Length: 168
Image (cartoon, rainbow, N blue to C red; front, side, top):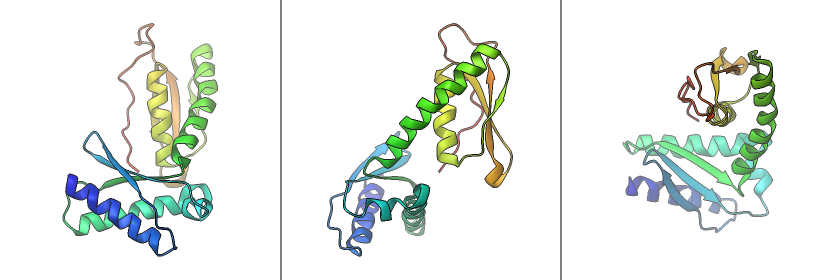
């Protein structure tokens, strides 16, 4: 795993150097499965992140593919530029709390708008912590979450019923 982390870190640093950025990428691992690469804030944040995170997802794909081509068993990569993903997830959870309250108070399921896999993963995790069941339904760009109250949940607000572990 350590070799894969070092390779991914160097790969991103080399990629950034093509844009004139000589920056130190911080590399860690999450549960020995996902390589986390944090790129510090630069004058090119907007370019590196892209519209709705498209460019940073493309960088993740490139690094993941490079790891696969090297035969690495650890190929899941998460790149965050200037805490963009962390801040986006925090905003999404804050927004989702209103949905969670509505589902809990009404007792009725709620279909959310379609969202990308990374955003769905954030909502699934938060819904589980809030004591709700969440399912991803649909295909492709129409894939979305359905939130439901968990009738078997205890008052502690915890459940093990989140039905999907998505990758990004």
